[in-house]
Image (cartoon, rainbow, N blue to C red; front, side, top):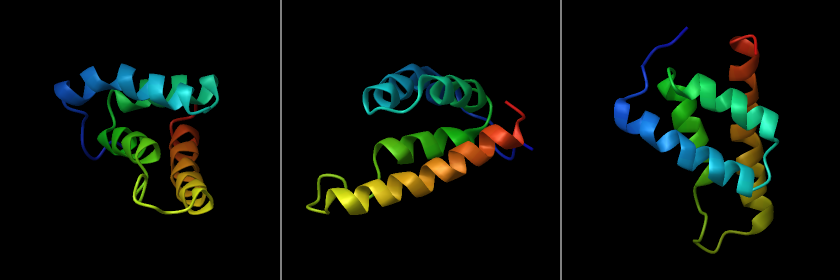
Amino acid sequence: MITFETTREQKEKIPELTSEMLYLGLNPSIVEKLSLIAMYDQGVFDLMELWIDVPGRGRGIGIVVLQKERDEVLKDLLASIKDYGL
């Protein structure tokens, strides 16, 4: 299932990503599962980064557009949790 493995540098960044996701209000159970998967699956790691820093953030794009972008990324993250059976 894993196409690309998470690098050592990315693994070191996972605690920072999970803290930010929790701060931004994502369910702790989801964040915990994602952090476990991201230790091995670079695609999930990349989606976590994208969820935090959705395109357009801080560039004058409305909050509704940002939330829609975040929701789309979250759908992919939740699908990954399901794919891994967690």
